[in-house]
Length: 437
Image (cartoon, rainbow, N blue to C red; front, side, top):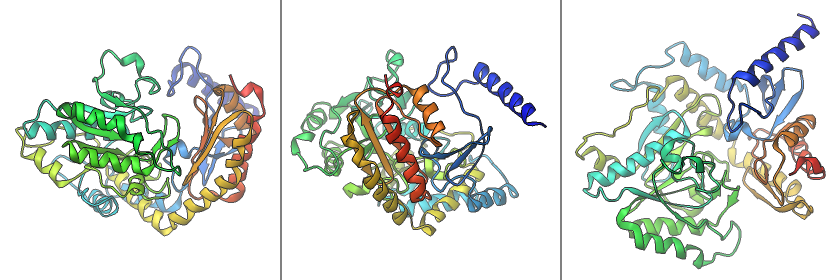
């Protein structure tokens, strides 16, 4: 096929995509542009026109070790020669058993029961159902609400939407049909600041007033992602654990975005040295290869549910414990330790401190912040998504801003030169008026 024919074929595919393929968070009548990826390797996305982009997003936090990794590829291929999937009802297999064993060993103490599911949002649904069924099994059916904080985000399925911020969580349109839960102010004492005890006062009041109707408290530990890339003080999370214990409320931590080293700890709740009753994992669990999630809980939660009227936990995804996904997840976790993830994250953090934090002095920037492998710039004005996205592609990077935020969370294998290119592109667009509304 000639170059001209190839270009024409690409245009035809993109025209079909624009007309018929509904991408996330975009309109079908006036969709945001989609860039055609032909392949990916390491930290690079190769577009169909031959251009290569450094991926600063890890494909929405999921690609931990880079694309097309030989060890992850090998795990996938080896498992496929045995079986790709079997139902998990009444059957089990080595890949799932090995994965659950790893997760029990790695997660905070007390999380020794593992429920596998399809995606992060479903892991949150599972956690919420666990909490509600736990309370019902104790004869406390009135404890049927959830408490959470503003600026939170936990996914796009229905129960998950009900604990996202009702204003900033993108789900206001569904307000009439969502569960009515209780929202405390977002943590205001930020990571690295001196702890202010009054930051917990309003939350403590809500626990005191509503504990008889609260089944669980759910929170993203340390990092509020979609709610603004806000990094809050670990003491806040420690206080949440104490309040849950005081008022007989389960603590759910949503580690879907923060798990597996992203914040500088293997799990973000380790910054506060606490163990939750229920933990949700996803995104990087398979190194970005196949969708898979896990909800871990304590033996007390699992046994209480199991001894209740239902006699079991009422959830069963068709692709639960998918063998391919579990095999690649095992390989990804092994690779995390082989590659010395602590040093990888420390290297990225140092580059972000050196290159990104100085941008806080820019007239267009309200604040710049760094934690582990996460770097964020909060701008004074919202970005023009279509324009700024096109500009980033021209600069050889893939960065997907939203609202007033331009942030990066690159694969752990990224090097200094690639980091410099990413942050340099961020600095470039800050100087261009048409990239902002």
